[in-house]
Image 1 (cartoon, rainbow, N blue to C red):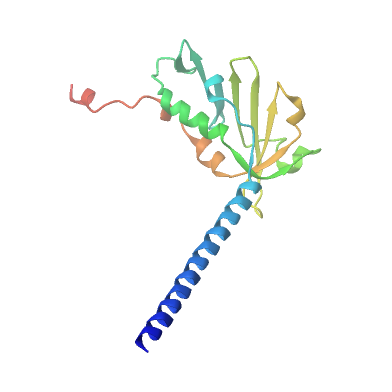
Image 2 (image 1 turned 90 degrees about the vertical axis):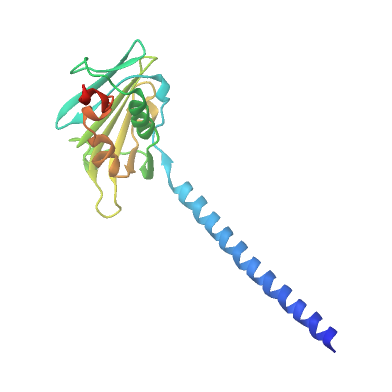
Length: 193
């Protein structure tokens, strides 16, 4: 009699363990599907090889901040005596190259609808082959959330009619960096001298 109870108890326990495993497997499958759907919704805007960038510029307080790579050293063109941190430049360029969009208007005929006739911000890079990319940021979409962006690629005009809806933090944070933020940080030792 005890043997039968033990067998029934083991069977019940096995069923419970299988049910719990099924719940976890179902939850993981659901999370994977959600992740895949989210990735399918995002589109890379216009990635570029950051190692090929020889110059870049963007607006800071309505003034162009221009940086140029000269003999392997980044220079701030307004004050070439500044020591620019190549790692900070690389991080900035990686962030700009990695912009993704949640929505794309394939053939935008009237870009003024997106505020691109009077951009709020711009970013441009020159690549080692002499080509350039210009990013124009337009108005914000209050309903969907995000800022409109159009990229002009002078080497590939087939892509220039697209308008992307991108995260507004690109304008409010990434492109809000001061030129000074690219400088090499001075160590505390120089203050003691």
